[in-house]
Image 1 (tube, rainbow, N blue to C red):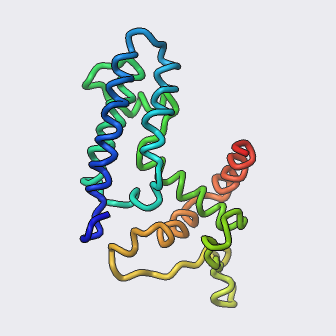
Image 2 (spheres, one colour):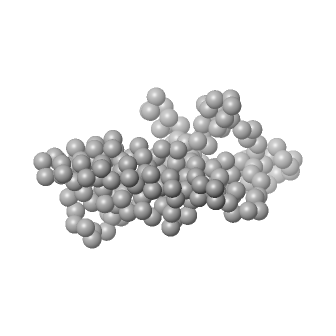
Image 3 (cartoon, rainbow, N blue to C red):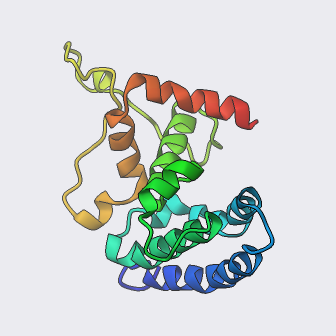
Length: 185
């Protein structure tokens, strides 16, 4: 992040780290199967895309577009597709998440870990539900309470977007995070 609270330098740094990995995957595509190329994507590119994504993932799409383009290029390479192939079907067939979905996934995981207090004490914020703020019955009384922020820059910070994102999820989707955590550990 630079002095103007912009993540463009960080994104440029990621681009320079992902480019050699793209070259390696592209060089290996003639001798490896799609499954092996997908494993290379998961080990060489995905860590850069998900590294502290809660901090930089909410930046503008114009700043994120170089990373999105590199991710699409990687998916085209791993599926042996042409350069102009639409990537929506490729992401669906390979079961890979686009960059904005990776960000949403980590928002959900962070919020779930907040709710069940799996995070270290220094990170856990005091989560209150709407029913703790006001003591009358409303249809949203069980949702996480969040304060409205006036500035756009602060409203993109993950500890403000997490409760909003969590409240927008359906109950059955919220329970899937528990299943994922159990299977992960």
